[in-house]
Length: 445
Image 1: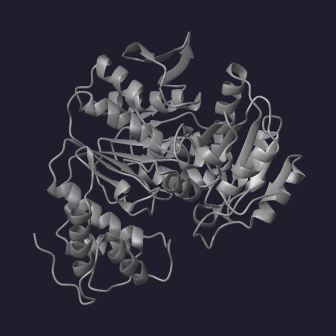
Image 2: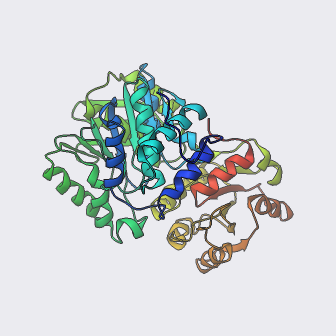
């Protein structure tokens, strides 16, 4: 279908179109379903022409769980669409069509179709780009769509899907309190808003407070509940992943993704597929998916690239986009596991957004990291001042300093060599992680 001409004139590519669309609403985030429903109706409801949908909400682990799901489904030859956010380097990363990232040409056409149908009405960028993604997912044949919630769940633009084959909720913790509420119960209520009537809801390990909210929401919707610790379990044993539910026991490999928390994410993916009961995923496919899943900027080792030249010789360079207390806990746990097996001095290079709780994030690294170097988040007006971040780190007892950017932080480590060479983790923001991958010459593919 050829897009209607846009009154603003031709665009040079998706970036120019996205910049134009971002001006349609004064707020970057304004949670509502009214605007996206209006636009989807104008587009003849592409959300009703999608393949089977697995809808995923939660605070931490959504991306990794989706990576496991995708790898498992593709291992049996199924065609898999994936919708995630935010992107790290290029917007195209958000939309994967039957295995491949969307091309600039296809993305531009879908954005122009959505823009023409919207006709200049107020709408947030996430809402209109989600509508464009649904156009692409409806037009390109596939067997399943893995759909990640953008923020919250109840009023998220993705929550226009009436009958997914499974609703999945990853671990919930405090984050985005300005939009979702200040308590774990309030946040869990927003996440549980994706639960649909009679659709199985698969739940990762949760705090009792969050689980109680999810249980009540599932009961109201008569949604079969598959909760970790009640209906399924997963743990590591002798270097293997052991999964169990009422259908039996699975002995699977340990994930390639680093960190004990990936055991839970992989188990959640297995539980989701077994609860959905729509896909012919064999034990061999589960094993291949767990071994093959990859997700950038989640405890990602950077063994090569331009940044390595700035680090001390022999140093390990790691990257993680975790930015909330729950994310800090799982990353610190992964680093503690590495430290136990391969001891090295740990240095954190941290950049965060001003709205985040830096003290709660860094508290998990007390006694594990010896130094924190605060850096700005590139090209972000919402970034925390590095001086404020360093002050919070010093208050927790870290040796803290400020650098103008990641390169300067790594250069500074070469002036005071550590023995053995340090393990350096760049963390605190997905926006920082994206900038690092771009500067390093290793963007996601």
